[in-house]
Length: 189
Image 1 (spheres, one colour):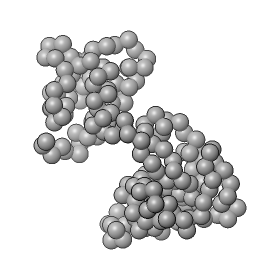
Image 2: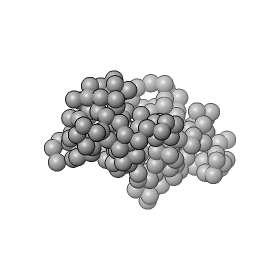
Image 3: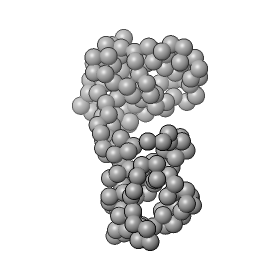
């Protein structure tokens, strides 16, 4: 398979989300590349080129079966898999993220939640018990988790990010109110 450009992957996610929306709320069974592109701000040619990286999807002159295209894009993007992830930071935002049901629909599952606040450790958030940040590395390595969600204060973000990378995390979904300096994190991996 040809190397797929990052902008194409990003557009596939947008296509998938739009197809998911119309599959649930509309009675549209077939969509053309023109209709799909127009709905998400891309040209019909761009839609066809993006999809061509992954084989044949539709019928020329007819369009794409909405449910089939959504399913295939979900497979390509890994949305049909269950991905375990951890959360660091169980304040208001962290607790809301743990209880956010859209993650489940996207194939994401919280396998552990962590905090450094002693008053939070041992408490339940949803069905999970808050563990100490000192246990992150053990849980990540034992369960082979590659994704972390961070909902920590800005002052803690870089240190927590470094510890996540040290533990073996490959992707950090950062909800801290500060951008992470990736070049600093990569040194620790």
